[in-house]
Amino acid sequence: AFGEDLIGEDVEAEMERLFERIESGEFARAWLEEKRSGGRRLAELRERERNLPIETVGKRVRERSMRGAPSSSLRTGVGKK
Image (cartoon, rainbow, N blue to C red; front, side, top):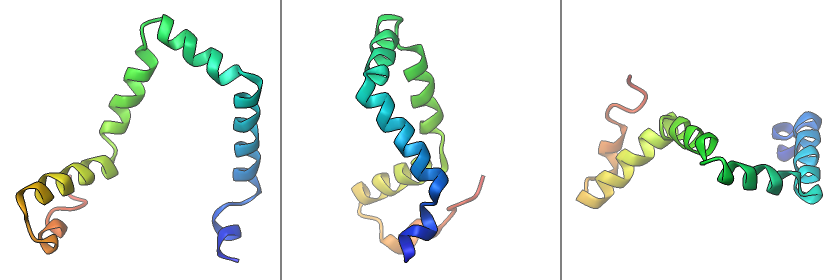
């Protein structure tokens, strides 16, 4: 019962709420309005995600894979600020 340990009732309830927003059209209306208003919120979300640790590490992984660096060298500096 591994999945139940990761996704509890609170997560299921939130997913259900999100599905309801999609089905009702609320989500689509909000993003259409976002587009009409110039997309500032989307730009903010993209910038915030660009700075997440997983994105920083992912960028380094992609750069090193393009250069052909050995995978063992990817551990160097991971998690350092």
